[in-house]
Image (cartoon, rainbow, N blue to C red; front, side):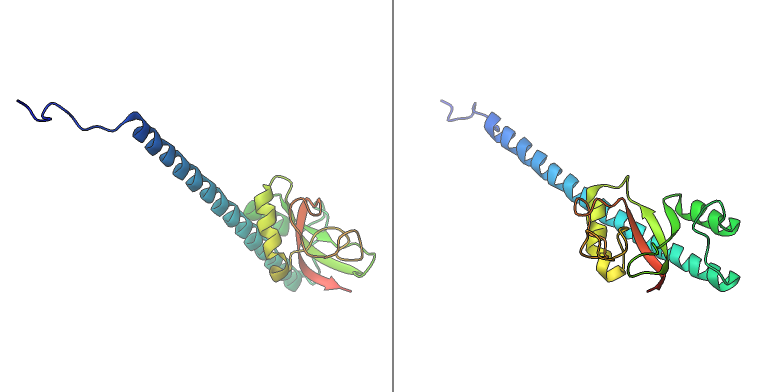
Length: 168
């Protein structure tokens, strides 16, 4: 007489299904958190590149006694080469509008048109602390209540600006 010797222990189909579902959920959560980290890193990279371009514009001014031109066609070739080779064509030097509060200003502009909403929103979180401006009249009483970049879906902005020199 055999007492259960022929019976094998095994997982049921339901138990295996639960384990597979749990692994899938954990993998999904991990993928979402990795995406969030990548967006924060991209926003930090953009901010750092804006600072590098600002330093380059300040060095240009120190060396040449004038700011780099706003138009790529007239920019000193060394400055233009630096901006495009080191930072890419999304970073440019722009002049502030001559209306409202600002009479003159030089900004480093970054084109956000191809960035994700999460990258834009991460930049918005850093905007006030790092002096990142939106592009609409630079706080001159336009439709936006703040000169600081507000993020995706809040302003419709397709660029972000870091002031180099501002004259009110």
